[in-house]
Image (cartoon, rainbow, N blue to C red):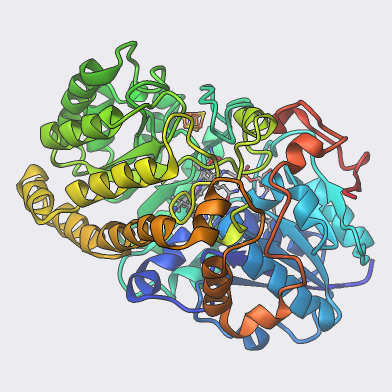
Length: 527
Ligand code: B12
Ligand code: SF4
């Protein structure tokens, strides 16, 4: 086979520029799969350049001019950036491939702008793409492995990519690691609710952790497992076998149901410094929080649990989804405020209910009932738009509650209360910085602005309410401004998408994403 010049781009931002916070944090958001894909391409004998795009790189300088094949890994929020970059590199003669959450969620849309769109990706799928490496236009070829890969390259193999990415992080450096795929829980809104839980090799995990200690002095590991610690004892044994006490710090997303006091003691002794459990709602998703209670009962129980966690783990971020169908009236928002009063040390992260295309079975229901709005992908990051019309709120009511809750959560009083509620310096500092930056005060400003426009800009209100599909100028102008010089590469029509493509797809009219499995051999055009 011809030796190809392959580029791999990991888009961790949606804009070709970075804020101060972005400059510090973006390299720490790097994905594992682009590094994995780069290693697989090398193993097939090709020449590979990987760039983690944090918003400041000049891609025309960092990637070879004569690329044969360009892989792009993108979240949906980076879709318009990815589409523009695909057009730019196609113009220079490259064949382009999209993978990652956006490709998994919106394959029909992405296939209009890429030669290949990949769902679940294993080494065989990558080998087939490399073997063919041909343009597929106007409709890209969709390929997907039958299931998640059984194994991934070692950390040692992907180290040069980790190292070059973390070299861009001026302060905190977080090494991305993965111990499992899928999840045994079935939260209806989640992309992994239909993907079987599958641990990767614990032997390799031990080797990876031992290797890391030979490269960094006191590393911080960021676990990308959708739900860390399902096989808790096996994980802890792997960590304990590889890492002497005090030599490594860890950050993980784990459900409350896995965080018993016994587990917390072991997490603490193994250096776990930050934990991000999902609470989601006071009325839904009880299994994750290990409770059948709802409403104020649940608030009290979860607050007590969170305070217990804080006695063992210095930093906790609690994740909520706002706008779920179980919520009605101001009460869910008021309950979250009571939770913040009872557990002031928790940093609250709010996600607006988002139906990411094929991500979850529940999305079909939203599409069938006409509740999904075509906000451009650029705004679908759980914050800048909520693309599902709330069931029991008008839009102004919903935004009034959202603004009120955001103000309460990041008020001077809440910020001050959070300081003594955590024990050590870095968490205290992190909570203050996050509150006053784009995450806290920035979101208050943004949500307040949207709330105002719902009253003053008819085009916004009509678009939110589904009276028109014409995109308000507010969104067009924002994408134009944020993509900057790359905007001119955005193909015509690429700002909009069919919000019901999953429902309309003849290939999978009523099946959840996990069930739509095509083997590489049976891969098809996504037209
Ligand atoms: C770990 C994680 C994070 C980590 C690490 C992110 C990262 N860069 O990977 C952190 C905390 C930083 C994070 C941040 C965010 N996240 Co996140 N995150 C996850 C989580 C829990 C696991 C994803 C994962 O790594 N799985 C393991 C990998 C191996 O499996 P996989 O993702 O299924 O990937 C397969 C294929 O897609 C493919 N593939 C994946 N990447 C690539 C790349 C290439 C080039 C190729 C060819 C193939 C390929 O191969 C894999 C094997 O089959 C998922 C939820 C979940 N349960 O899956 C959400 C999820 C991916 N996140 C989500 C979101 C919205 C975000 C944020 C926007 C949140 C926010 N507001 O800040 C940011 C965006 C960050 C960014 N880089 O742009 C959404 C994405 C939806 C979408 N369509 O965009 C998800 C699905 C959660 C949800 N809401 O449902 N996240
Ligand atoms: S516990 Fe987390 S990863 Fe698992 S299905 Fe629920 S939201 Fe998804």
